[in-house]
Amino acid sequence: MALSDAERFPLLNEEGLKMLDRLRGHPCAPRFNHPCGDMLTQAGFEAVHTYETNLADAPRGWAEGSVPPWVSEFVEHCRREVPFYRRHFADSGTDFFRLPCCDRRDLKRKPEAFVTDGSRLDEMIVYWTTGTTGQALDIYSHPIISSMYLAALRHMLGQAGITLDGGAGRVSIANVSDQNTTFTYATIMTYLRQAGHVKVNLNTGDWNRQEDRAAFLDDCDPEIYTGDPIAFAALARLPLRTRPKALVSSAMTLLPAWKNALEERFECPVLDVYSMNESRFIAVASADVKDASTVPVHEIVPHDVFVEIIDAAGDPVPSGARGEIAVTCGRNPYLPLIRYRTGDFASMRFSPVEAEGVASETVQSTGFKTVAVKTKVEIVGLEGRAATLFFATDGRVINSINVTHSLGNFAFAQFALRQTADGSLSFKARGGEYDAEAVRKAILDQFGTSQMLTIGDLTDAETTGGKIISYECEISDRPFQLKL
Image (cartoon, rainbow, N blue to C red; front, side, top):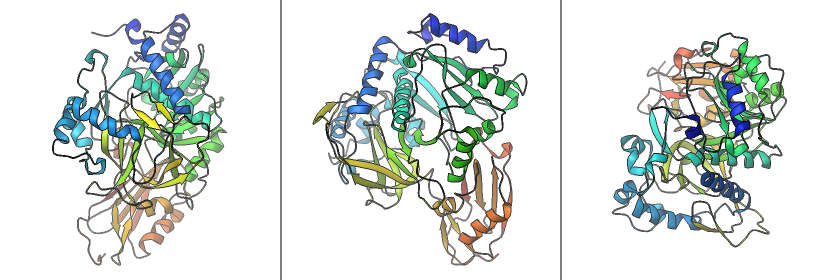
C-alpha cells in the first residue's frame, strides 16, 4: 500500500505542501516515476540538528596508527548487538587492526544480518543501488541518514564559504542524472526549512519536450546542483539562464580539466566529494587541484567516520603507501560498518593542526565518546575501484592511477580504457571536446609508441545505468613481454 504525503512527510507544513504541489504539477516537469519523502519526525529533526552541531564543534582526526576513542566502544557495541559482527568477530581479539574486514559481498549475501538488534523495522528505508560497479545491492537505512547528509553537505559548503540557506518557497537542491533510466522525483526537505528538492534525469525520454529540461530547471533555480561528471556534461549543454552557488560532484572521477570547464560554464565552484551509499559523505577534495600535475587530496570531514588504508590481507599500510580504503562508521543503525572494504584505492597522510577552543571530551550523535585531537587526515590520490594493472609491449606494468594522472588535463566527463588479451588498447570517452591525437600521445607516453591503441566515442550502450568501469584488462598473468 502506498504511503500518504502525511506519512512520507511527518513535518510537512502548508508552505512545504504548496511547494510540493508546484513541483509535481509544473507544466515543464519531467515524468516523475518515484514518490519520495524524508520520513523525518520531530525526534529525527532534533537528532539531525545535534549531528550538524557536532560537525562544527566535535573534534575529528586521529594520530597515525591509532583509532579515535569512540571506535573501541562502537566495536564492542556491534559485537553484542549486530548479528553479522557477533559471528564475524567470534574468534577475534580486541586489537582493532586484527579484526577481519567485510565488503560488498557480505552486504549482498545477507543485509539483514547488519541490522542492530532491537531496531524498529517499521522505520527502515531500503535503497536499491548499483554503485559504480553495476552490481545491484540493497542498502538498509534510517530516515535521519538522508537528512544527516544534508547537514554534512551544508557544513562542507560552509567551509568553502557557500551557504545552503533552504527555506520555504525555494528549491535548494537539484540532483541531475544522465542515464537510460533512474528514479526521479520531487520532494521536500523539511530539515532545510521546507525547501524543495528535485531529482531529474536529463535523458530526453523522461520529458514531454526537449526544451522542458532547461525551462523546468531555470524555474526551479536551485541553490546547488548535485550529480556526477557525466550528468554535468548533459547539464552544461542546456541553455540555462540561472546560475547555482555550486556544483557538487560525486560517484565518478572528476578530472581537473573537466572541473575547470564546469566552473567556467556555470560560473561557480565545483566541489568533488568522496561519498558512498553505504556510509554517505566521507571527504571533500581540495579546491587547489587545477591540473593533472597535482595529485587530488580529499580531507575527511565528518567526526563519526574512521578511515584506514589496508593491504590485501587487511593490514594497515604505512602513511603514504597506496592500498584499499576501509571505512568504519556507526551512523546508520541498520548498516553499522567496521573495516568495510570500499573497493577504492588511495594513500593517506596526517598533518598536525591547531585545535584551540575544542572541548576535551564531546558526546557525538552516535552515542560514543571522542576526545580532542590535533591531526588532519587526508586521502591522497583517490582512485575509484581497484587499481587496474596494464602491460606495455616491453613488459612494464602500468598502474591505472598513472593513466588517470596522464589524462587529467583533458575535459572528459567519462572515459574507459580497455586492454584485450592480445595486449592492444581501446580508449573511449564522452562529455567534452578533445584532441584525439593529444589523447593518443598522453596514453602512449605511458605505454610506449609501439603500443596498439584505438580511440573512439563512448556510447550509452556501453554503460550500465549510465555508469561504466573506467579500467579493464583481460591479461590475467604478467608476461615479460607482449608480442603485438
